[in-house]
Image (cartoon, rainbow, N blue to C red; front, side, top):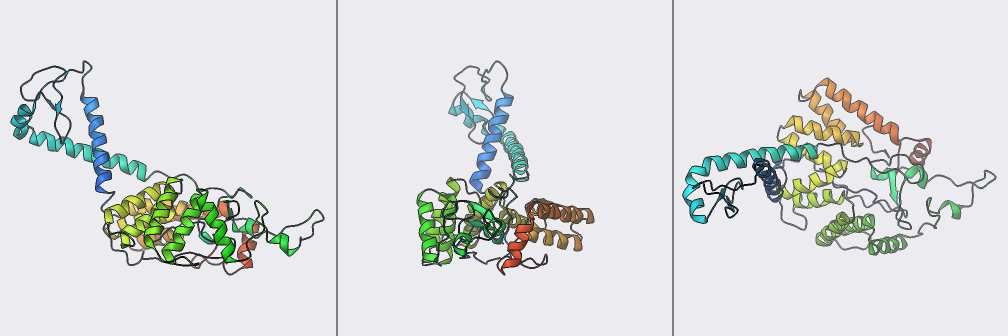
Length: 371
């Protein structure tokens, strides 16, 4: 199971990737979204059904005695679908209404689940483009860098592209170490990088909040390990639009890091992250469904993750095909989707950056790579 760590390689070269994966040993039970989320959805659907069941004259009728009037406004507390003129009528009618009440609740719950799945399995919004080359930013952290000087996330190709003067000559090494976007000189130490990152966080930069949260989570770069502070920063990052932090919050609930283990809350936050476009959360949801032998749902999650560049999901679809849980057509579509993703992110400059350093290696599908 993956924890989101997007944009966490700083320009000073500090890699704060958590390096954790429990996908292969994940045996959690997918209980869907949290109870509160389910209840909210059911209540919303009940409200819609109640609105649709109201006739044009909007005349309320007591389900027990048949009295009509505007004062017939004592509603069934459970299904919200029938009205009574007073509490006595409600109590008297309770046994007769029980089966109908349960039916209303069941229908509402089924409809709520359908509506939830429609939203859950929608293709999420596309990832951002690099603000310099305008190509899709790679999914892997090693292919993108957050610049704490200006708050931009740029691809590794643009970050490490050589700078030339008007005569076509490479400029001096000092110029080569400038930010590719704002041209501020890169920090010469990790301390300076952290200072810049802290200033960005204080300016309500969601990426900086997430990254410092990762430092607290791991206890690195001079930050003590503190899950509570990490969670607080991730919640703040979400408030400022960094939806990938939801996945980290879900991971914390999944593994009891800074909070009590709560599988329902874990799935709830994974779903929020996945619907926001985080492919790691989408893959996590797929593994949960896969472990419960809900292969149709797992395949849907994996396919969405593959379209977003999650190679692990491609491997899992391959395993499903090998085990007879997915068709050859499913695997073919996944391969095609992944190749389309690679075509969207690849460029000569990114390949050069990948070949320049072991941190961004060009390698086979199975090994670590920048894309």
